[in-house]
Image (cartoon, rainbow, N blue to C red):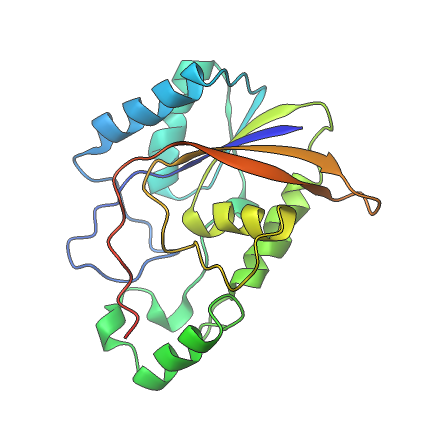
Length: 205
């Protein structure tokens, strides 16, 4: 099975706050970003037969353009929505209580954000959708850094200690190739096809 993923474009976040479920629109750079990602996808030979997207606006904008390019209808799925940062949503990382920040830094994927999720929650819901896909199919997900990283961790063996969630560029295109293991779960490999605008480093101190 082949799965292509594209991370959303740069969101409009002028106050530089933490966002997961916050439904930001796209930045003015969207036309250039989206065109570059879709061109890279097509030039890489992608031929998806189904197009899944997070319901958040920053993904929907890109998914609409991908739908035009591929002729595929959009399928909105909550399983591939971004992490819920709970009480951190809408806050600057520099204003988060220092004891909470220290607890996160000590356990980047396992820490549960107050009144929110941890990154292992994304693993579970992303896998629940992944496992329903046809073994011989080719699919496209328009999603978020947390979801794409989850695929690299739970399905491709990337250790939790390698925290890539904060390192992906916007509109990054990735190609995953999977086969089912003895338990019926997809496992495989990935390769990055395209990079877009780099994301600013997370302010974790």
